[in-house]
Image 1 (cartoon, rainbow, N blue to C red):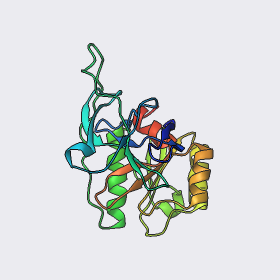
Image 2: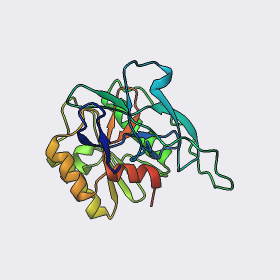
Image 3: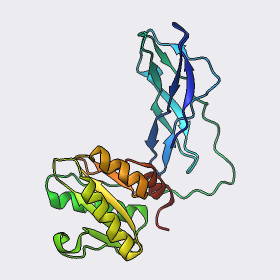
Image 4: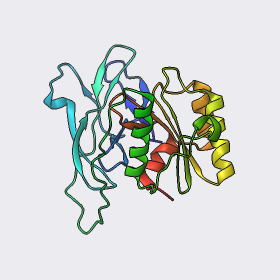
Length: 225
């Protein structure tokens, strides 16, 4: 989880706590914008497209990309732009383990959601991802060595019971569980997943899963154990 940094409003002088945003790099690793904690924020009076982006280099793969520049809105109405550590040149001699670009599949049906999750797990490095049969009987939609996964393609947030059931299947099989949901998760389901260290992913209709909690970030970063 990204560490928060203090932000001092230049107008009312109040101190706030700000958690830098985290984005998924093309290599699959989570990238947290390196907001400078001891720098003076810039008062935002006019927003331009060019100034709304900042170059940041991924510490995992050394790839440099443009990311939305972090901003903070104070309760007094002031909006500030937060300074970010400038991108340095590429590191010499650093081994690079780049994954190819993930190729999503558009989700129009429940079957498409399972296909998207299957493709994503294969992209993460899991081999021989299979479907064990009727999910109502097996309790899981996808299996791989050391992993069981469940896909919720419904329009309602995934329940606490569904999260706990997947965790129990993983416990029985001595495997990591991974949950994919189209509509997100109920609050108690997400809290319980954090306690159980169960990776949660949310998918949009483009078929691109996004990690939703710390265990999911770790699974994306580290891949199969």
